[in-house]
Image 1 (cartoon, rainbow, N blue to C red):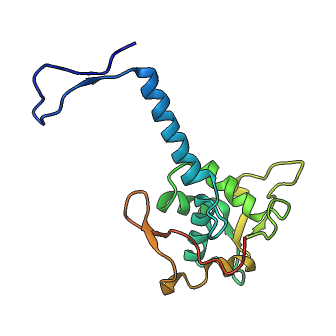
Image 2 (cartoon, rainbow, N blue to C red; image 1 turned 90 degrees about the vertical axis):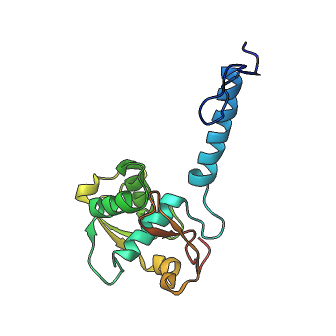
Length: 174
């Protein structure tokens, strides 16, 4: 086991010193911090709107694309691409899985996405994103309306090029 000590050698150009630490203790602490961060920022729904970040990003992007219930469906792959490119750089399968769940009437009390095609069943999985189409369900309008009226705070996306809502202005308990 290494003992934590400050290297008595010369300081680097920035005045920093190299410190020896116990690798197992550092890994344990770093893993716990990372696990907490993932659970808090991705896995748990926000109590204010009842949505996980990926679900919020999907609904926001669909509203931004104009995929209202009174308009036609668009390919799910297009929605996934828009969300991944602008708001959620974590891979298309995570986004599509969340989109599918938002459309399944057996998964949510009130579906927020109106899916067209095979979005799965209790016994079988959904078709690929290129074979399904989606638009916002009427119930999702209660979560996404008034976004343009400064009723919620907006935060920068992962690269700072776009803004996304910190929470959706939920008009009903989700």
